[in-house]
Image 1 (cartoon, helix red, strand yellow):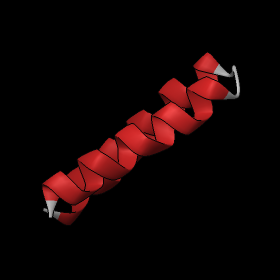
Image 2: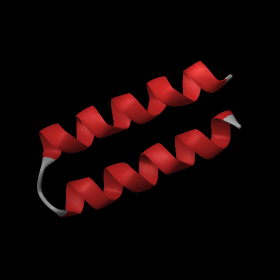
Image 3: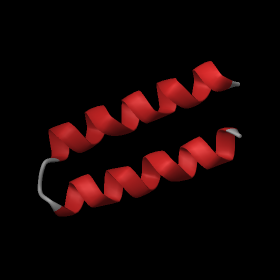
Image 4: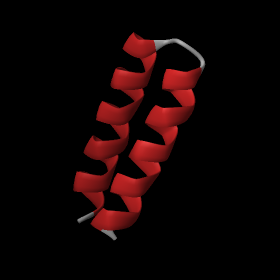
Length: 40
């Protein structure tokens, strides 16, 4: 389950990074990781 959330965070980060919003991408990745940790 943790791997799934990690992959999700990385994919989301890549999408956000490509749209040139580095701060938003970083924040999004952090939120995704936190959500993943809560599920464990």
